Image 1: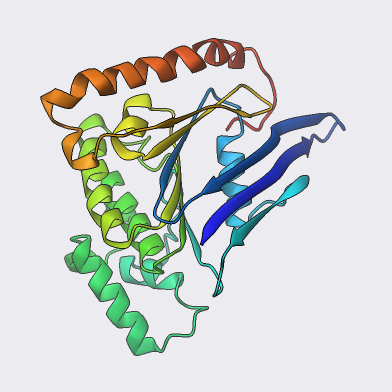
Image 2 (image 1 turned 135 degrees about the horizontal axis):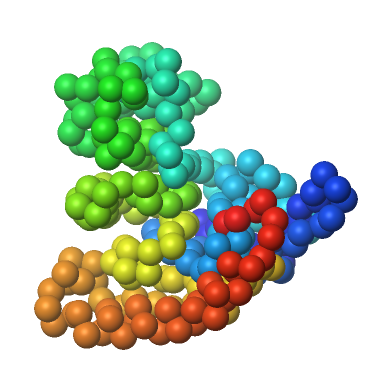
Length: 261
């Protein structure tokens, strides 16, 4: 199945009646198993696109659909701050996304236990989010998304609030978990190096209204991107991206409006 964007736009109307166009018409396709990073200046509509893909927002025009779907598609999202329910335990948070599916309670328990073990969270199954570190809360959020085995995984700057060391460790973990299921993925980030480390394809956005001004492919296999031999090529790609968004990032500092991503 391919996830398709067909001339998708989004315009917000402020309380004072002013309209803010977050996204210019976007037409793109995400292939099965493709990891796409979305990067661009603040306010360019990256997160808006994610919320449209999740069905949490409706497009102003255009449509988002699956091509070649033989079954109902499943979408899961990992939020910037985890998005966990503080009154539920870790196990119950992970199980929450399975409650409306056709699984027995035993099947849900087995799936949750398996995912917690894979994410090294088994001993925290009965803990509450408030007792966990930021990195562990994000691992719970990732487990909650992946337990559904989604066709489309949406990630909205999931590691941006973490320290640099925890961030790199979780990036490595994410790659391992992602490789097992390989869902089509849209990953929003402001971190150019992170986009280059993780993605197969990078969509570079213009300032608002967001449009894709560059679509770059990372040809180096992920398992080789940490090697010294790859650093020159990856550094060149990072510089290409930075030069593309540099002017837009400067302009974004002067743009108003509440819809920052």
